[in-house]
Image (tube, rainbow, N blue to C red):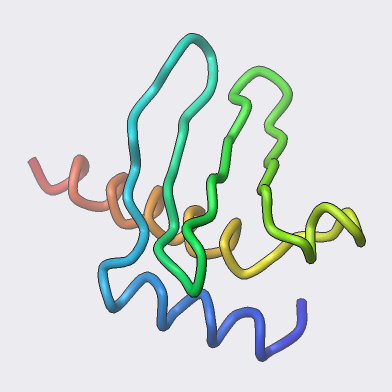
Length: 83
């Protein structure tokens, strides 16, 4: 993973720009507020991620939006364990 993607993802996460829209069917939907709102989907059965950003669409590689959503999921899991 490129360090700049990770840093951008951390910045998005820490600034509250990653929002989980919840589970719909067997997928979790997210919105990431960036220069342009990005939509990320995590398909639970296949454990696959999809983003509508140009980087992912053109290169098919993990983008900072996906990484930020993964960070949010981990944070939510930690909060659930504390309950």
